[in-house]
Image (cartoon, rainbow, N blue to C red; front, side, top):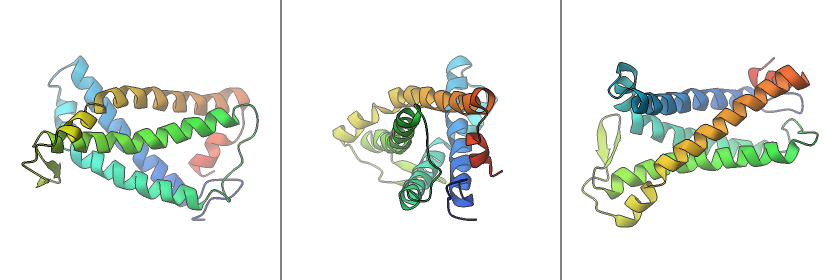
Length: 174
């Protein structure tokens, strides 16, 4: 089933979720591994695609946001005391996942480097101070996103191991 239902997330929601998750994990781990071990092979293999992956995340998040809004009436219900925390956690994650690539693109564009997607430069030779200033949010947002992702994973584990409900199964498609 493509659409969401009260009992599970549809294949479009699940596909977008896991594709974005893989891309975000690639971005964050390659950046953090480079902090711990500068010049490591893994980070060097990913860093050349960092902007392209970021633009991909932005496009997928735009689609996912529009899809999620269209599915609000069909989505599984959130029950219990954690409902508001789950909703706000997801809203924050969506917002940060949109702001991260935008701030990264603004950083490189505002500094005059252009935005490279699949090796092609767009918006080169710009010197846009406000964009470069907005781009300064990129690194702090990456730490905040890391905290949100960690919390998201921990809450999925909590639902599976402690509450023993079907929250994780809904996103796995079972």
